Image (cartoon, rainbow, N blue to C red; front, side):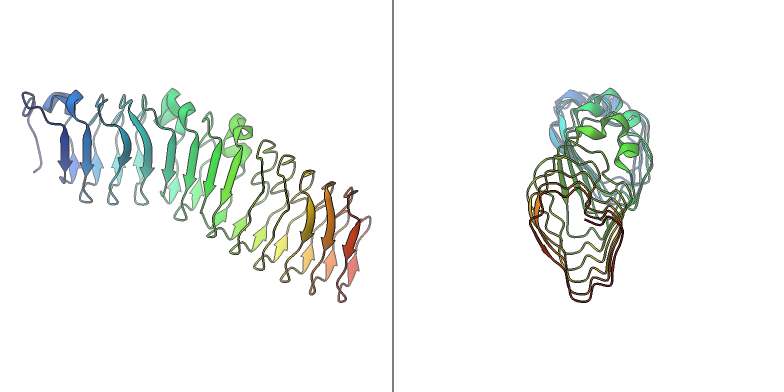
Amino acid sequence: MQTIEREAFCDCNITKLVIEMENITFRSNEVFNHKNIKELVLLDTVKTIGQEAFSGCSGIAGELKLPAGLENIYSNAFSECSSITTLTLPEGLQSIGGSAFSGCGITKLTIGMENITFKSNEIFAANCTTIQELVLLDTVKTIGQDAFSGCGITKLIIGMENIKFKSNEMFKDSYTNIKELVLLDTVKTIGQEAFSGCENITGELRLLGGLQSIGAAAFSGCKNITGELRLLGGLQSIGAAAFSGCKNITGELRLPGGLQTISQSAFSYCSSITTLTLPEGLQSIGGSAFSGCSGITELTLPEGLQTIELKCF
């Protein structure tokens, strides 16, 4: 099927709509009694959802499942679908038109798109403030600046392999809203200043075994991260000031065996660390690496350590 004429199903009481046509060009409010539609099923054959295709379908509730084969969503495609609360944008999706989801009540957004080029305040409009949970899957490669500016995101779950963004650029003024950060085991690198200044991230920070490097100032100033920091065996490098000012990391800090260098100021002013165990194989510790760690009462240095730079402790 390629086209559907106006008012083709207006006298029908359709509540479930299943679509397999490749290009959806109709507008539901012209073809159906669209307010009655409560369930929408889009099959994997769907590639394009046209302008205002499902605008005003306020009966569609809960999770909106977009098909894996979807490539383009045009402007206002789902605008005023006020009962949609959960949305997943699939990996193959290439473009999203303006106000595509404006007026939706989305609280959880999951993204698999390889390149995130949209700005949330353009496709969700004022409703981007309702988004509380953001999941970035391992298929995500790049994220544009200001992508989530103005969103109300408090929980951030990340599976992307290489975290290259800076939260204060990606979220702009709303980056301090983030309270819960979950990093999945698919994460290999955390880039420079990725979460710097996210001072409202609370609780323990769990860094899993797939992690290989932590960039400079990645978590600097995250003063409300609490509990012991567990760094597992795959970690090879910790950048300068990576955890500087994380004053509520407590107890024992045991660094993994694969680590060869600790950069300058890496853990400076982590004043609640009490026990520090540095691994065999560690060769150098940068200047001021543990400066201001006034709570350390027990320190274990490896036999093969070659260089301890100025004001390290």
